[in-house]
Length: 291
Image 1 (cartoon, one colour):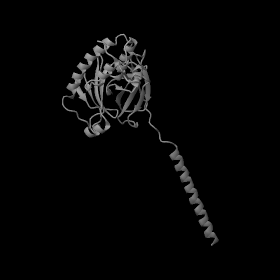
Image 2 (cartoon, one colour; image 1 turned 180 degrees about the horizontal axis):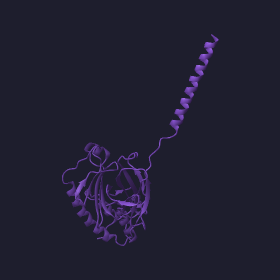
Image 3 (cartoon, one colour; image 1 turned 180 degrees about the vertical axis):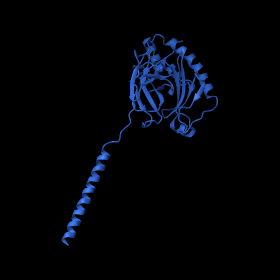
Image 4 (tube, helix red, strand yellow; image 1 turned 135 degrees about the vertical axis):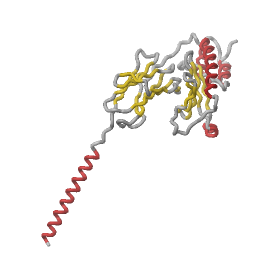
């Protein structure tokens, strides 16, 4: 059976439990048009949007959005992200761009990445089991989509140069967290490696699951727990299939020294004060002599 673009869009957009990404719909419609298909009666503005060039992001996944008013009533996350590849999987819930829960398919458990002092979300029992079921559905659909799109070349986007910064203001001897952030890459994920003074570090490291950007690329952040000591040097290296060698950024332990301004003003004020005392004493003595 030959499917028109309108049929595809209708079928995909009406799937509530599992929604294919819009750019996959776009690519399939463009592919069909080149093969002599039609837009199936789609409105001109929709047909134009479907046929303009776009990056191909051929991953299977779902995004379930809820309106802000509905969210305020039910306190449900505004975005569910579900995706898979032949060797990996992902499901997370987010609110205002921050992860609230994600499935760790290696440890086979749900993870709450937010600190405990932040207003906590707690999901019902069975959320992780549901995520595993979604992965089975996702991988089944991925095979179908891969077969349908096997002749369309993949697009690969390299990551940006990583950015390193400390979570808190650096104080020598006080535990802190280094964050290495990278964005703009496709496909996901990236691999992040940490070093301290030229030696690889694995203890105290963690990385979040890939988070989608608006353009279909991804971003990720890795963290390293550390105790700053003067002279220590850390590096974050990011590896991705599009790179011939990892991107590396260096971070040195630096403690901000107090500026010279306060000392100068203090000295100037003291000098003016002493001059005032001397002048007052001089006029007091002169006044006594005149009398």
